[in-house]
Amino acid sequence: MIRRNRILRTSPAIRAMVAETVLRPSDFIAPLFIVEGQNVKEEIISMPGYFRYSLDLTVKEVKELWNMGIKSVLLFIKCADELKDNKGTEAVNPNGLMQRAIKAIKDAVPEIVVMTDVALDPYSSYGHDGIVENGEIVNDITVEVLSRMSLSHAEAGADFVAPSDKMDGRILSIRTILEQHSFHKVGIMAYSAKYASCLYGPFRDALDSAPGFGDKKTYQLDFANSDQALKETLMDVEEGADIVMVKPALYYLDVIQKIKDHVHVPVSAYHVSGEYSMIKAAAKMGWLNEEKAIIEALTSIKRAGADLIATYFAKDAVRLL
Ligand SMILES: NCc1[nH]cc(CCC(=O)O)c1CC(=O)O
Ligand SMILES: [Mg+2]
Image (tube, rainbow, N blue to C red; front, top):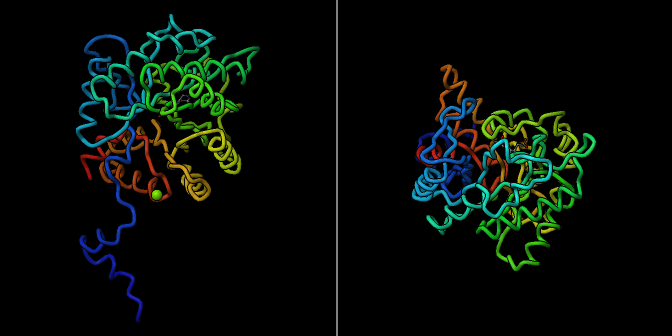
């Protein structure tokens, strides 16, 4: 025998020297769920250890994230039922919870990169990402609202808008409206390869945003496919996306790799709520070691080609590095 493969795995020091993939705090984007009120910290039942915070506590949390070395937060708000409609009225309210959250965070921690979710589902009386007519999600009217919504986030101080709706043509429309209003420095992180997945359930519990009828298969991608993911990602880059996203992450590592091989913009991956909850549940049962499961999952997502990872484990991961 003259080839000794195990030499490179002999000791922790050697393994560290040859590790190709190393996680760092700036890899992570921390999603935050925001609710109205004061001093509110509500645990999300299907996401043990993860919380909805009122604005005051959100700001505290953001300071902590920044001090840990995390550079970016991705904001989601829980909209009150009485403010939901089929027009996205509250989504463009300059004094809405999202707009106030952006301002409060940028005032408290100006350096942190604030990204905002752009889609109508938390604001929709139907729980859909767009405007509903005759049981269908209408593309072009929705794109107009999403563009005005993006503008209102930019006006509040967002650094990146993150359209997660999967309507056609929204990236070009959003870039155009941002340019028209001289928001040349506001970026777009496009959820380009977003799949219709079973793994968003806990997130929809967190925001009370589950679709009231049907599913999201006419706009989100079919998990049987990866060609459409690549095609639509390339189109989003063409239309002006600064960062593209694959979502969910672990079931879609092939998609991350394929996209990374074809684009020259940063690729992010969203390790989604269901992926978080699966690890939490198995760990609670004593069937998996939580810390090891977190690091293996996130390292694998990065190894597949993700430059950035949106994950509910951001803080845990930084503590474990
Ligand atoms: N468009 C809304 C949106 N933005 C992020 C997620 C899911 C995130 C997660 O599960 O962690 C969803 C849910 C959905 O599309 O139904
Ligand atoms: Mg890389």
